[in-house]
Length: 530
Ligand code: ACM
Image 1 (cartoon, rainbow, N blue to C red):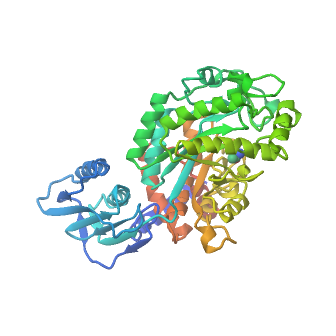
Image 2: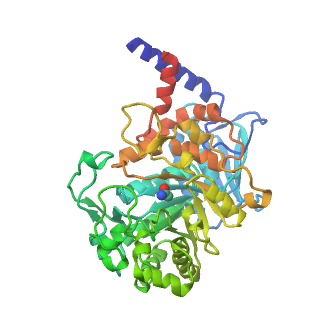
Image 3: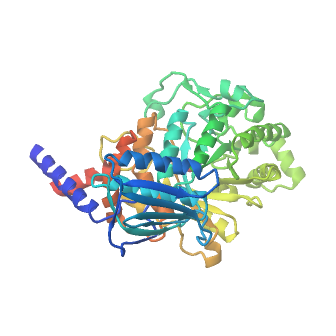
């Protein structure tokens, strides 16, 4: 068995070595890459960075480039080479760039600071790949993303993750040219954002008295207080940090369901009769926000503080999995429906969301919600995240609302990624790396115009069973690397090609102290050993 293992590892490493000589290890892969020019650029030369760009958003990118070039230049050769950087508005995509590497000169052009940033990310991956010889083969790259919204969601409610971990995620996302980090900040099991006007949201709603052990209530409860929250100062700092890497943070404040933590802090927010508590088990709870003036005023106050922290053009208002039983039983809700001519509780949810939308629109922002916000009528300007499959996204696109596709079967990173029984507990479902890679975000059945409303895709890490940062990394990587290529590359070169680039890239993840899943090797090992 031991000999077989050694053999397997040997074959894998041979494959990897063989591959790095043939393929440019760029992740996500560029849209056009040509190797018609001969020669190599020598990193071990005196490289002058030439840029007349005055945009201050470009300065940190050039600084990072400088530091990296100094690091690669171990012994000094006096031969002079140039790295020229320009803005070029003939590059039509706002995030687009071209990178030309020739024997004595590198030329990077971007539509604006973002394109320059992405071009530098690509260059740094090449410099890393060829760092042993210090010779980068001549290449011409013309690149721009397939989709404008390339997102990742982290659920920080079910389990709380330190702000430094969130920043680390931002770092890796930027390397992968991802541009939106969605933070699921509130849910039944914890409220994670400081709201100065309502301190009990974090004092009470930020902590639960225990957490279910395992998957089923019979398995027991830790009976240990668990929680935490981000201060506004921490979140503002995160927003600033992410902006330097061209990543927008989308905050989510869940309503009208998944509201137990807020209700535990301020019980007047609900009409429900039973005990109020921050939940210790997972699932959907009947105690939801009541559509009273008190609730709307509360939510508007909360959103004022949220919008002051997050400049995001979209504010996520949740909208999913809101049971209607409490509203059905509530005399207040029934009277309100009668007075306003609201025909059923689905329409009452629509009324709720539309009121919130009006408020958020009045502050110059748009709302985005999970696809349940289609039920009872979509709010006029709402954007939709389609999670229960593609149908909600298709419907919203046909109604000419912007859509982010995040169908559960391809985008839920809380699903298992391997059949290895040693893998830790996960939500259910099976989403191996290859399935993520082969996801096609453009659903069938949309005409050309309707298809333009599919603005992007997002992968979600729900954290019911993701108890710590190492496990979060394990669930996210390398699946999120495959996902980034789905979002960026118009004509993906295929899973085998991706794997050839990914294997050497794993050492970069390791260098960044990322605890990634080795599911890929499990499969190779199984193929080799059987
Ligand atoms: C969701 O998974 N409930 C959006």
